[in-house]
Length: 388
Image 1 (cartoon, helix red, strand yellow):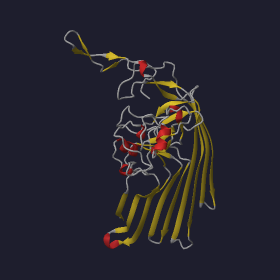
Image 2: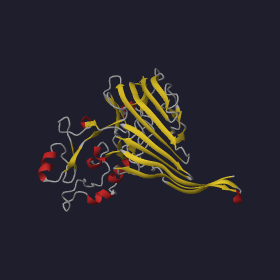
Image 3: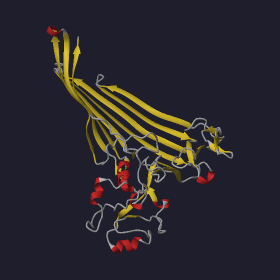
Image 4: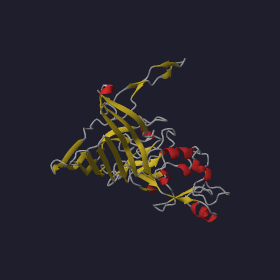
């Protein structure tokens, strides 16, 4: 939120020509509207936690059940262009911060670890696991059923782009509401039938489902299509040591999040995606890939389509290492030396076709939006640790 969002302010930098010579004069103006009655959000947190230690400190269990209720959320209400604050190629000034709705987060967090060592003391291991599940729901928007659109999947196309995420009562914050694609027009019969909805349609164009049956594809045909929030997340790690050897592996699993492949979307708008090499044409009439119309805002490549939405489930090996320790090295003036090889993020298993399913996001509207974010780096190390 911008600073001082409750105070109308006069801003500089709006210079204008004045006088018969049209000399450039310094100008100031009020660029934004404000709500002088806005107030802080209220968050009510409740949780119950349990910590258990069993079996002579070998087994540790932590459990936490929580619920966070957020009241009077501060949201940016988008204003119509007729309000006078619209600026081309920017959404900086056409919003107003208001208190508009309630939201609840509830879930569970579990962690457990078990450690043991052999009687001889030359073999030991520790197994650790975590599990988290969070249910997020917008419970009220002060009379608005669905609104506060955001989540543009590309920053390059400026205003020639549709929003993909919204706030809607009864759904996760920042959920995807998209128009459902219905395949490519491959035959004259399909074309004749679809022209009732889109008179400009051609063979090779994408068809969309007319949910409300009014023969027009618009925002009323958007349907809930999931969100960037995972159904649950889990982690598992194993630490082993046997005599002078040590081994460690850490893994992570995320299930059920949807990802909007913005990099793929943008490549499609420019006609540069590899898949478009196999797009529909009279010579390739069975293709399910729409024809490139060399138009970044053609219906074939509208960002409101679920064509670019993918399953973001993934399993990743975050860290793995193997080492060997040489002990008692007085000839070299060392107490010990450890030789090791390690890797960070070496393997990721997913059906997501983008760079990286761990796309992050800086807020509830952008989680699950992949704008071509730089992927998590892989690292491979070979090293030596010396102890004097």
